[in-house]
Length: 411
Image 1 (tube, rainbow, N blue to C red):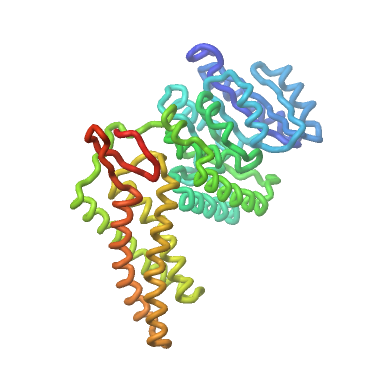
Image 2: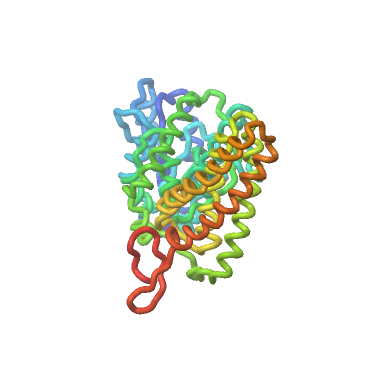
């Protein structure tokens, strides 16, 4: 077993709670695989978070009998807490964890670890949601998993596909920088870690995995889902308040664009904004018609406009005004929502006037009036985005810089 870079290359943490029935079989299987397939130095740490069965006794015996197996015990429950404790004490270059049931095929370990050891990536995760992944699990769990990850991508604007697969790895220097800002100590821990990593401009490597559901899983799906939603709200609030220094982490560890994007000309901005606006208008119309059944006209208008506003701001930020990276991302979205409020007031007023003039108006006429109002709102949106949200100023030396709500150094 070669050390790879000197010292310990990889430490795999296996968080456990009352897993006496499967612990020995899983740890033996994992150690055998690493001995045969992993050519860098490795260690397995059993992270016991307050087990009350024979898990502790079995873990201590395995640690004494199997080379490169260690044992840590916490007196407080929490998978995230167990990972935080074990990773924080590790001296390895790369930190990983796997679920004790080994639902993920261990053949995915080498490609999970390789990009971190080489420095190509910062975080590496297994995903069960790619086309080439092979997954065996019940319809209910499949639906919940896909729905949660879709919600996560839409609300937090992240690109990774599977936040919950218990098969992840991270470079130790990255973990040391991010972990102090991860508040959750339970099942939302790794989702929160991934959100912060992507928002800080870190590279997340995904590999499709083969995964078989453990029929004996004791995870409370409903409670976990509720806790995750609360976690999403909390993280979003922290980002809006600026309590997480994402810009500082980005400057230290993030990967910016190879070539700084060139801000389009005014004409180019108009064309790009027009394309985004056209797509947003179509999306609004479709959403309004879909929501008009279960909601009243004003409610459907508000919901459709809010959803399209978030996507519109993100698209214009990147496509129209060529702004990359996490800097001021949430400030831009907040300012975009202010613009949305003004746009909504235009459309809401137009709808109210229409109903006052003709109370029995047909849905098609409502849509026509709202579309016209949206055209006016779109023109207002462009002016505010250009002159306020993503405005330019000229520095003392004549250089141009993007101003994003606070004073920024010229670039």
